[in-house]
Structures are given as structure tokens and as C-alpha cells.
Image (cartoon, rainbow, N blue to C red):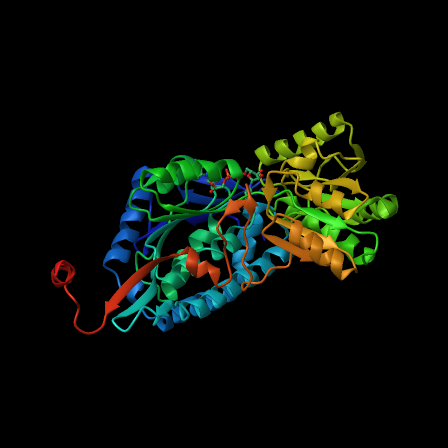
Length: 498
Ligand code: NDP
């Protein structure tokens, strides 16, 4: 399944594959196997400028912003079909570059295709308001227009899925785009270029530049010809993007980190909660903004429940991402591996009890870490507050709902949370008081294109998905339409003086 020679990629600018102007390239080693799996053109400032110029031209003079919703929908639906048709190859590329399990990568391709389908429906529902209440001489129209050229920067954890949370919605609104995927996982995003051309999206509407955060991402987010940035990644780089955007006050939408609590009340269906607790920390090796990385358990059931979590997590299959049975694959990079191991060390030194794992695993030629569970964690510890982005669960206990809410809200993040209880009052009152963009009740990490996604506090700004996505990628314009003869300002002045 590992290709004999690495996949080759160029930049995608103006509707065609082009090498970088410097001729420079970079490659990617599979995090699980000792093999180079992709070689990519390396975009510099001049290449990003060329991509922005193509997007600007396509927005200012091209047909896409003025195409009807029906025409745009046709292209987006076709793109969804093509993603489904190419699912096997796309999933393989995703697994080889990111280290995620192949079965999960396939699911992500279906999920991504569903986002293109849904965005197609929105492109036919871009509507505004009409005010027929301003008196007989005035009709007020409030319309939505595409915001312009959108820069999209994506991370390495869900490459095709995250670009699909942004790009089809920007396209549905009539925008043109420049996309910069993570240098670690650019393959599937670069493949979108040909897919979108085949789907009928005109040249220059989507441009894709593989390259490093600095200079490629930095140039995109600071460029005066870019009207909006849509970014997913770390909170610290999100803040850098905001700073870079100041030059032309471009709009910035951010989807950042999380330290998401799953709150388990004693009256919950504990079997279901157990499964979700282990899934919540092992899914995508814990490299997930939505990971349920904090487990808050009511003290009366705490000891028994944590024991069961440890026993179930011990059973999780860690191994070759290309093996169909694998549930936890390889850690994406040496840097990420060191970061996770550093937090495990900090947890030990801070006095938390290492109940499971904490060790690297020798599998293939890759970087693997055992599912790890710390209990006796207190809210002030770094492993209770900071995003580890690895398979490391921090367990805290509480006595009352009030305490659970206080602990849940005690980090700088506010992306998502889970609440497990059979009591409707507890479910609703706790959900309402948690400061997070998504709260799951008696389930965890489900997602639907219809439902908005994003964070409170330092987990981001703005929302993706749902019909609100159209608001993100459009400007509001007010048109005031005068009806009948207008009383002139000069005549009104004379009347007043008379
Ligand atoms: P980053 O935030 O550094 O990277 C995300 C994207 O931003 C990548 O495309 C990156 O490019 C780009 N980027 C980097 N520097 C700049 C810059 N100065 N201007 C514009 N774009 C830039 O995430 P990392 O990959 O470094 O991961 C670090 C940590 O971030 C993780 O441990 C995790 O905590 C968090 N994270 C959160 C994610 C989420 O979904 N919320 C996703 C990924 C990471 P390049 O790849 O070339 O560096």
C-alpha cells in the first residue's frame, strides 16, 4: 500500500499545476513508516502573490461571483461526487501523511463529501431582508454579497475535512480562494485542484499553495488583496494571523484549540459514557481540537468509573495506520511527539497519578504513544489546563453540578463539552452554563453540516458550518430605494423658513 515512489505535487494556480518559481521542493516522511510518501513544490512569497493575483482577477472580473446559486450548486455537488469516487486514494494519502488509521481516513472522506453536498444547498439560499415599513416613499433592501478573496490556512490533523469545512462554503457564497494546507499534510488539498477543475469551477477561483507557515501562511494573512482569512490551528498562530490582518483590516475567522471536558454525573448511562470517554481521547490519536481531554467524574462513581476507563483504554489497538483494525495510529511529527511526552512528564512531576500508559511504543519505524490516563488531577495542573493534542486523558473529580461547571469553565478554551446524565434538568442547566461553542448531551463528537461549529474564549472567533457559514463569507449591503417624487433638500429648507 505504500507507493514505490513518492506522490508528486505542484502548486495549483490559475487553474493549472505550476512549479514554485524558485524550483524549491520539500517532502514528507510517513510518521509510521520509514518512507518518503510525498514531494511538493515549496511556495515562497512570490508564489503566494501569484495565487492571490489569480484569485483577485477571478473575483473582480471572473464569472464565479455572479454565477447563479444553481450554477454554483452544480459544481459543488459534482465535487462531492468526485471526492467519493476518489475516496480510496485520498484516504491513503491522508493516512500516509498524517499517521491516522485508514478506516477512519475513509470515513473522513465521506464526511468531507457531505460538506460539499450541504454547501451546494446553501448556495441557492443566499437571501437578505426587505423593509416595507419605512413609509410610502422608501423600500429598504439588505442583501448579501461575497466578501471577496478568502485566504484559507489549515492544519495537519484533518486535512481534507477541515478544508471542506471552509472552502465549499466560501465558494457557495461566490468568493474566490487561496488555500495553504499544513506543510505536513498537503497531499489531499493539492489533489482538490484537479477535482474542482473537473467539477467545473472556473480557473483562478481556487488556488492552492503548499509551503511553510512562514513565509507562505504569513504572506497570505498579511496581504492587502486578501479580504478575509479563515484559519484552523493553534491559538498562538491564530493570534499571529489576527496581527497580520491589521494592515488592511481583513475579516478573520478562527477555529482554534480546546481542552474539552466530558462531565459524567453518577446517574448517567455509565456504559455509554465509558465508551465515549475512551473514544474522546483516542480518536485521531488525541490530535483533535474536539478531544475530550478532561474527564470530570462525580465522586460517588469516580473510582469504579476510572478503573473501567483504564481497562477499556488498555484494549485499544495501537498500530500500523494501514491496518484495518488499528484504532490509534502514529503521532504526526517529532515536534508533536516531544510535546506530548513533555506533558506526560509534567503530569508525573506535578503529582498526578499515572493510571495507564505514558510510554512510547516501538512499532514499525514510527512514533507511537500508548493511550495514557492520569487521575488525581487538580484544576491548576498544566495537564488539566493546556491542550496536549495527544492520547492523554486527565481525570478530575467533583461533588456538585456547581463544582463541575466551575472546573469545566476554568481554562482559557471554550470549544466543546460533553454532559452525561439521565436527568433533563441537570442536562439543560449544565449545558446552558458551560461556556463552549458545542455541548453534546449523552453523546460525544458527533457532527452535522447543518450545525454551526466554533469556539468561545480563546478557542476561536466566528462559526463554521450551518447556514451561518454564509454569513461568514458575505458582506451585508443596504440599498435604500426611493419610491415616487423626492422632496428636495432645498425645497424643504424654503418651507421651513416660510
Ligand atoms: P499551527 O497552528 O502552527 O499550524 C496551523 C497552520 O498554520 C499550518 O498550515 C501552518 O503552516 C500555518 N502557520 C504556521 N505559522 C504561521 C504563520 N506565522 N502565519 C500563518 N500561518 C502559519 O499548528 P501546528 O501544526 O504547529 O501544531 C501545534 C499545536 O497547535 C498542536 O500541538 C495543537 O495544540 C494545536 N493545533 C490545533 C488544531 C486545531 O484543530 N484546533 C490543529 C492543529 C494544531 P505549517 O504547517 O507550515 O507550519
